[in-house]
Length: 464
Image (cartoon, rainbow, N blue to C red):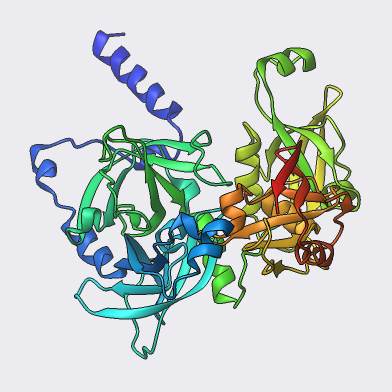
């Protein structure tokens, strides 16, 4: 056989070995192809990308006003000076009736939100839904009757590293801008931005103001929402992160259904990463998978037969490398029916069908503490399965958990944080929000508080 025939045979065998998805992509083969333009895709996508302006009023409060001696001798002045704090971001129109998705951090705490379209028209917008766990929010334009251009969702699971993508947004407030690059990595889970860490990484230039903007593929479909960058300078250094479209789709669907919170499946089990030491103990070749560290009684996981020390290796055919990957895959499963979970148990593979249902949220009894106390301004709730799942705390804990704190509130000044579990105040057990409300209304000389934060118990003593 000649050398030429051998080369052809080798080439054909290599082509046959390529993944099926990779065969749909190709590099330019002629100079004419290098003169092609992205303009048709840009013209189709940019009308659906908007600018989001958020503003909130903050008071320039003098810290001396919190000193009781100062207040006694000098009294309390009337109206404190106010300042308008503004933030800028981007958004994507996902429904022709005027529904916009953006990042939660763009509009967090805003008293007023405006949306500017690509044709320069501006509209007041209301916040329909906020989801801090995904850093996504959904807005609705006010008092509109026309139909707006939208972007269709792509299946973000079809993305491959090396695919060309474009980022559209309003960086630095200069106006709508388009940048392009490739998908640098998929399933980034060590970024630390949101609860659901499963980001698309791209080298398309993303800068401040791009947050909430669109990452689109070459068909003009939405593959992700740009949300963060890794940068030492504050500007783009070629490492940007986007929330996959399949997660965005879940949040938008909850908003369209009229919900104030995202409806997502509840597992009812806590998972931990597999370290090299754990892998060696379990006899694993690689430290991958999600190890079950606890199972809540009566939860979907318990009813499916998931057990302590089970190693989850796949869900509905998707390989699971770590707990973050499982959380994303499970959260994007549609409610109803079951998810097929593959676990390794005592050296053998076991398949389990986990029901896809929301966590029970009965007895939450949310309140905001108004009484002058260290808890003033904190929004608290009883620990229900839904609250525990939302805040990533142990559902078996007793007590009252902090779910939010108003900006500048005494509770924030004291140091309380979202997710803190209040167990006792002045030797009195706090089992319900009504218990905390009653304790906060008293005026003791000292506040002795027991708090659990990150699994650690903290004893705090504060002056009255």
